[in-house]
Length: 595
Image (cartoon, rainbow, N blue to C red; front, top):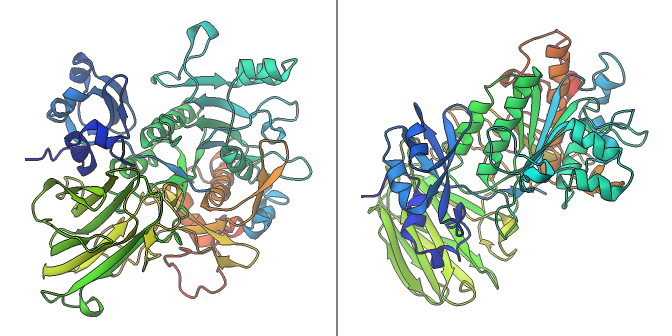
């Protein structure tokens, strides 16, 4: 009997030898070989004091969530504790790499009444770090606008005065005072000795610049006089992708700081992943929903760049969505490109539907996968080992997952066309939903032959209470096809955030956006990563008008989302609103302020 407190992926990882897990994209994420420990996300009730007595490191987060560091032999014992409700392993996060302010009706409220600039509001950017010496993040006296910078990648060192934030054991926290000393140091070498935090990719600097860059006559962000809190996410593995646990720590840190400072906060998240049912049921998604209700908080999340990546396919075995006769079948073809070192495939289905599932390899080998029996099975097809985990509904999720991990027996997964043949045995809905890993970690030639652009939002933009931001091309006034798309909610029974849910909420400019780079100049950036900060900055302006200036002390959370939805303007080519491409339309701050 599988432990039903553990998510499917964690159950599979615990049943798989480490030398096999190391070849997988997902299974070894969260395992630390040197200490032989697992980092785990838990939902709990009561107290976790008993776990600390067992030698387990406990980091309590918000709203009954915690991160545990557990010796590998104690995972089952942890799950058996009555305080523990559910356990997940971390997932990796992938960054979703014209004059957007004018297109978003921002200048109408910044250069004339009510002259909004974000003063009194915190803009928090959780990303790849920031170029803290960049002029766009300085006050007029050249001191820093950054109140706190938590670099999760810099080890703590008491001898150098480097300590993690209170309540955390990871990285180093720098205060405004420390950053100011670095800014006024005599040499650049001395400056970076005092605060050795760098944004290597430039992603976080560009995002922060769009949301909150100070004006210099050439460029100005949306909320140029806001205060900043920056978290550089940790990079715990050789693939250099941060994990969901680092994000959950960061969210907790930012909200606690905002509460201590008695300031409203607008948080920007410009990354995500494709693992999950896309229904808001994972611990990360539910954590973000809870975090959105703490304090005076708004969280904006980019919808991801998977809309045109051919990494998702969905369908219905019924005739035009009607009755599903037994024996009806469909083949879903997946092309695997050259030199694919690892690959995973998720199949999500409604648990009430019973299917026969057959996997066919490029050379015609066939293997029936018995999906009515929960647990792990393994087999080899050509030069690829296939690990399959057949899941069951979880305490927090009604859907069923069948997870495939393609592990090369030699160097690479067998290339060519793999076919998933689905046959109806006894079906009610007849629906099926396949997902590949993010386009960032697979070959461009690894893709479904008949992809579906709908429900390509990345997680956690699927959380119900965040503002999910898609991208459009402001030069052509058109939807950007790479932007993650949302729900066809009238017909969908798997992966729906809530009854009648709409995702994305709105879109913002996301094609060839000018933003500060880490060389003191400007670059052109494309992706929903750079659409989200327009909304993050816009939320800061609304909270300044409402909370700081006393016009509406309750203008935060879902109320900000409601105002932005109402003020959204039409996009060329879209005739019905809301829809799965642009939600309620394009960001327009001027029309979102109450009159």
